[in-house]
Image (cartoon, rainbow, N blue to C red; front, side, top):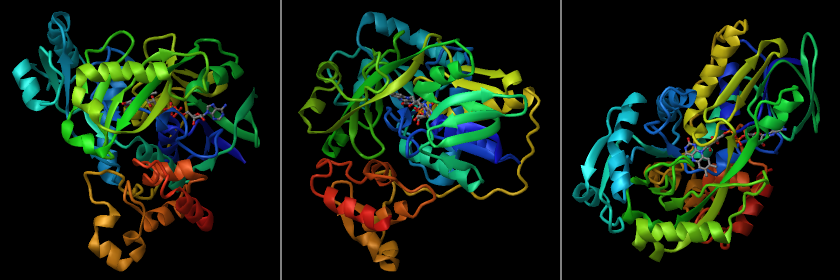
Length: 455
Ligand SMILES: Cc1cc2nc3c(=O)[nH]c(=O)nc-3n(C[C@H](O)[C@H](O)[C@H](O)COP(=O)(O)OP(=O)(O)OC[C@H]3O[C@@H](n4cnc5c(N)ncnc54)[C@H](O)[C@@H]3O)c2cc1C
């Protein structure tokens, strides 16, 4: 089998590209080293659907975040990906930051976002009553939203498979041989042959680029650690509380999560190890210190979990998407801290690159409807709350994970889905099971047994 296009990396970006390609008359392979999709950076981020108000105007990132916001918002309503349009307030804590607000407002306008307003301290406290003392003013960003990153990745990959893409998990790419007619991709599970190759390998994208003979950038894993507070903390804050961004990134925020918790983070620390996804004492101490200023009452709440993700930061300040027509190869690199939002727009942009390189993209005559995803959002009806659903299928009335109210019916559905989980972590991302305050202490054995029975 010679695929027309092979996409390497089944995170949000690669899955979005595979989905877009599979909407055309092309044989598409989505190649992933791990045994599940969405197990890299795309599973561990801050899960904010960004408007792009604070991007650097004129960059590709600014353009694609803005477009991605529109595309993902629309796709979320088609597929049931949970989104809450909470809005955000960027808070100024000193005179210098206060002076920056008009510049940030102008920047938002330059990025095509005109809804930011500067508000005084009274208004900030009216909207975020539990904010720590000392805020001097703020900038509103009414469309900044929270979303379920796990469902985004799963919906895009499921859609790609439903459209005919071959999902090749457990295929770690180890070598590349470009010949005149096609490219042979040597993987841990055997060779895959394709005419075009798209590199969407996130943290591994520079190494893979090297296999094509390029040495144009280096990925530095930039760790972001986060603390998740218990659901009882949720009444403290119903908006995203942002700091004034710095050259290092967006800074530490407090945000409600789509699962009904409150989150504090992320840190921003450059590492040498691309596998260091554990949290650290220093990182958590740093967050607690920030939290003490931002929202002291939050620190009195119970912590449910901590986690960390690695941004694929590169030695450039913009996305690096480049096509090598002679090699029939597209690099999608440097998708650092906005790829959840921009993924679908990146896919659209990559299509444009391929067309410019002479690839003929003929839309598929008929496409399946987008998948309808199970709702993991706390603000929307969950199966255990739906009498009619339970009457029709009592498995939706049998709660297995009591912290997160996940039912046997949802676990069964996940195990029978188009891309079933290969382990407990994958099941967690598909259902929220084991994600709550007991962290599987109570339900872990039963969940494991249900997973094994279903397989
Ligand atoms: C702390 C933090 C907070 C963030 N917050 C936000 C946010 O609020 N909003 C937002 O929009 N974005 C946010 N981001 C950014 C966003 O998460 C990323 O930009 C996005 O997930 C990148 O997706 P990806 O598909 O490029 O990478 P990944 O999800 O890492 O996918 C790459 C895939 O490639 C696979 N791969 C690598 N090498 C190989 C190989 N040799 N062979 C086969 N497969 C390979 C990997 O296993 C992986 O699955 C945040 C990131 C972090 C870390």
